[in-house]
Image: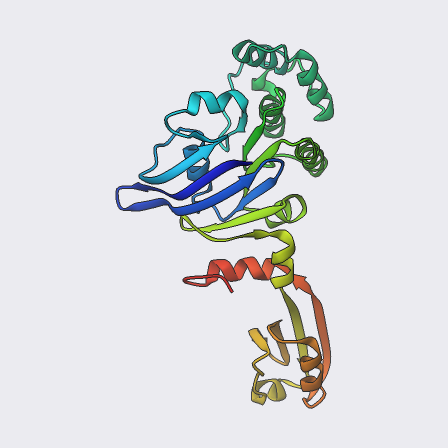
Length: 298
């Protein structure tokens, strides 16, 4: 079943677009990422799914329930980490887990304690003495301790060191393998590349792509660097259609390969070129193209 479903979901703030005509289907057990720069609409979409904001048009459902009218039912089986996490200064991790358990009607001492150990967080330190990373880890523990059917994380790795990012990724993969669904936003390509089954790319409130990571990797272009014999040769040589030249600096061209490698090799053999570097397919370049192109993806 689809845990999250939206149909032409839109939210506008007067004339400003928050999100526009978003179409999503996120099945059970998937790790789904929403990638985009700050201000792209990622947090707005999450707040609509959580019932914090009412959409201007379209529909949004979680567990088959309407996100605005039935939000209180949805939240029973949902774990959430906000991007602007706020915690009481006097709160300790131990107290926070006990309070969360009382609110949910569950004893979270054992699962919460296990997560505190995994994320190396002292249960007795108050929030006012925690670093930003420690507060973020506490927010993650509170989102995961009750083992929700759906975990929604807004920029979850903010403030985490590399080891804790790996631990979070491991925990999310474990949850997904057991049938839980993970929905998280990020502006960092490496996070979604190594963790997600699928990713939606958003720009200015609109979803410009929603594809599997495998398909995106197949579509990614190779980076090519050409070094000509001298600057004059580089300037007078006409670029072939199979190369998208991004930068010309003296005798060096930096390009994206939009054609085939055999065709490139044959063309190079006839040019005054001393050296060539062909890199692996670059997802970074692919995502930059989504953000540069006015209307649609490459």
